[in-house]
Amino acid sequence: MNGTDAIANVTRRAEGPAVSELNVAAGTALADLLRSTLGPNGRDKMMVDDGTVVLTNDGASIVDRMEIASPAAKLVADVARAQSGELGDGSTSAIVLAGALLEEAESLLEDGLHPTTVVGGYHEAARRIHGTLDGMAVDGDDGSLRDVVSTAITGRWDDERTAFLADLAVRAYRAARGPDGDVHLENVTIHGVAGGETTDSELLDGLVIDTDASSTSLSDVPAPVPRRVRDARVAVVDDQLTVQSPESVSRYSLESADDLRRARDHEEAEYRRYVETLAAHDVDVLFCQKSVDDRLRTQLARAGILVFERTRQDEVHKLERATGARAVMRLDALDRSAVGRADGVERVELGGGSFVVVREASSEQVSVLLRAGTPHVVDETERILTDAIALLETLAVRPGLVPGGGATEVALARDLREHGRGVAGRESLAVDAVADALETIPVALARNAGLDPVDTLLELRRRHAAGDVRVGIDGDAGELVDAVDRGVVEPAHLKERVVANATDAASLVLRIDGIIETAGSADADGHGGHDHDHDHGGAAFRSDPGGYPWAIGH
Image 1 (cartoon, rainbow, N blue to C red):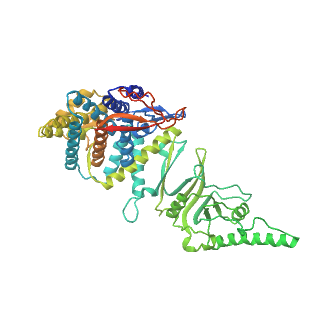
Image 2: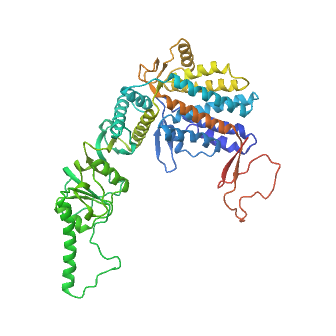
Image 3: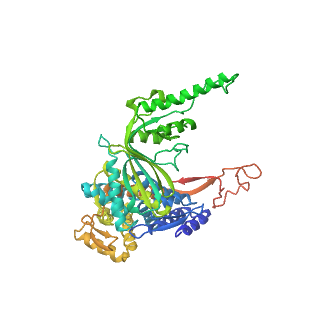
């Protein structure tokens, strides 16, 4: 994978004296690795330890699967995890910006600036950017939701599938809106199934349970079991359905044929009571959190009742939202108010897997059934949809849109250069450095779109200076356009967090003087990882592979 060798070289050199420079180099090497994944044609693949090939241009997915030895590079990698976990998008941009900030800092340090001065200038620039973004942000409408998702997906799929997935994500997001008007993402379940076209994916009102991935199962019974139940009444029981026996009795002691007959009569009466209880409430489908006795399953099947056992607790909650059923601890506690309903309950086979589909038109629970040709594509599509829904939630919490395609970064850089003239002291140089770092985003977008990066950046600067502050790069068309008119927009809060996370990561790396590995396990002599040479004059750092890295700051 491009870039990993650079990180490895930095790590091997980390025992040398110039640790501060190596910290910077480790961060920039990681940024170089991800820069090629930014934009419309960005794509990268990697081989993980178990031999699995992962094809993605999602920065957080790449970083999560990398083995990064350098502690400084790990700090920068955490930017992607924080960005993706918080907002669902922008992880690659955050790392690329963090790497650019470190690269700019390297030049400033060589010019004699102290790391504290550089950090101060970076944070001054971040404060300025926060205020500028608030002034740039504009309100969107319902159509803007699709534009936001399409902008995030662009480059990860072709035009047809980008439009389809954007529409699917928006529909799933809106369907998860509760009666209180708030969006509850826990009400959205996503399942990916290999075998089929991406456009075969569908949004279902109700719940889809993957019985291969879940413990939920439908065991074979001698009686025929229906594959589909229409207008189903659904019961959920949090109990084990079997003939109960006293806890202190491990086995029966039968002394005569009458005793055996009475025991059998008792069991039959218990089984009959279970069946009659469910039949009395017109239950068609039973979900049981624990196991169901084999004989009882057979009798329930003969009565036309579809039974699923060992349903997970989280799926029990989803079933309650999907059907309106209320889980009862014991079957005896079942009443009509606890019985829910579904338009249909169906057992289906898709892509070699077995699924239970609970359909309900008025359900608070919705499910997305994603289809794709191969497991690799399924995984990438699921990542795309999950990130898209999280991004829409971000926009709902902090409304406000700004132009995409690098337009916002060019506008912020131009504003920072003007602002830097009024900053006293050497920190003004660091403010200008942040402006230069921001422009690495449109440069990377231009390169990955097949445009000349230098010419594109110069033209963007010229157009913005002339007042066309919404001009950015349309990666699919490979040209400069009015980003807002083209529908290339991003949440202002996303841009703000990219800058904040990248600035924090770069500042933390700049404040580290060195890395010391403490011994974490005893050596062969049982003395721990101590160096018995007691060489206090050496500048090199010794390390133990099992130790924990500690950062030494200013």
